[in-house]
Length: 344
Image (tube, rainbow, N blue to C red):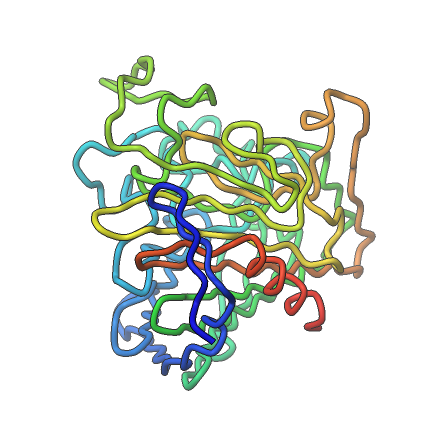
């Protein structure tokens, strides 16, 4: 059967025949002299796992589509012309939370003054457990969530699985957090699984919070002719209206050069707080936060998640990056979400 194409400007929905695309080989290579692991799909660079303590948390950066278009912001690691320079803690793809026993793991960065660092947590990767390639690439690692005195609050075991086809890249993340002491994830806005988008994927003329920095002073966001993105959720919420709503998946899509680029995050039904709230901001922050409710519900509900010492919790997410002359349809994303939901 030939694909069925329906045109919406530059966006094209298509028949899920793309699922039959041939899977491409994945190579995972650890650099000997750096805390860095490179991932290639079909011999093309996809992303790198960066885990020096200087980043305050491990990240995937940069992240590319199958056409090698970079879909994450470069600042502050590798700045590109004309991109925003707000929120220096938002780098690549990450997994952190704003309030763990009173410590802010989300907002920690080089920009925090030394005298205030004690208010922030640190995620330190101490062991790479597995690296492998093939039709799927795997990076598994252990990290400690610590305070500034290196006291461990949580132990993290994460497995990142990478796969791809001619037009698609997928990152599956499974993270297990084990409490080394009694842990409170106090209801907060900034969490949990997030990425910072390339400039083109921002929403134009967004009303979301957005600032740029000039000489360390905040200035209003200027007129933007590069951003052309838009969000849509599985529940049909679009644009800035996607923020603070629950859905099983959320997608951002835009035109970058000659290609349509879409990035979808898919929640897993076994995650706490499913379906997650989307902390999806027009200025380029794209995050799933299942542990914060108060701000998203205007105070109608509050979620304070607790782990006793020795207890653990598991989070699973799938990120799908599509590129080409079409963007992934809601029907396809629902099928991908159904498939993901059946995976343990």
